[in-house]
Length: 155
Image 1 (tube, rainbow, N blue to C red):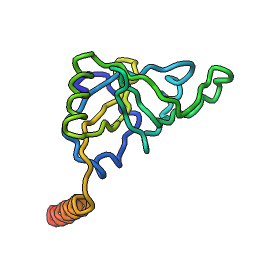
Image 2 (image 1 turned 90 degrees about the horizontal axis):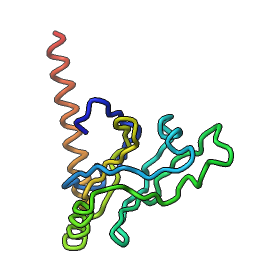
Image 3 (image 1 turned 90 degrees about the vertical axis):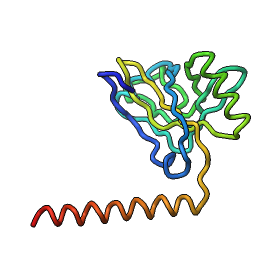
């Protein structure tokens, strides 16, 4: 996402809570009808969505793009499975890693890059309950430290 014109539309906050993200990949999304207009309006949800590799192609399952308000017959099923665009060598790498290490492909965010809708995928390993608690405890102590520093700077 090092481009000048990249704007995040939706984030999957639960992904970082539920998974350790080991590596990230960017992919284009094949859209039809008025889906890009809905994405530009920010009407996209990544909750409970995931990516899978099928016959050498990557698909996103469960991503919800709300129908466009003025879309009429060009609107499609909001939760349909959409194809993702990636290079063959990237797909082969992902396939190998997910098969061998047992990792999952989780969407992290949807963003616009040079006018095109892109999705950031993360190679993720599921967190155990104690990992989630540790992450939450660390976040809480960081907040407390920031609060104390802020109070000291105000004096």
